[in-house]
Length: 84
View (spheres, rainbow, N blue to C red):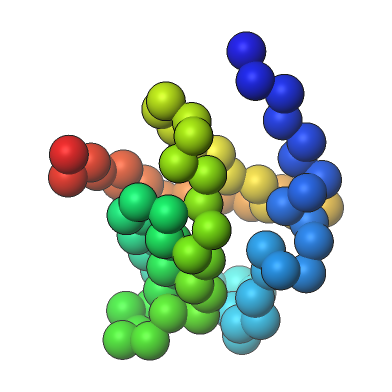
């Protein structure tokens, strides 16, 4: 089992700014290919975040969601697909 330091992902380099509605649903799409991750909001053509340094040394991965320090949150119509 690999050691994992979640707090590494709170660094500014793993964050991006976006304007999100506080009381309405919004759409998030995350595409991961090789070492690259792109995050899109509300079907916009330009990603709000791009990372090109994902760790390829991991034999497999997982998907996790974190709501930050919010007291509540919800997901709807969650879909996870693999193109492999």
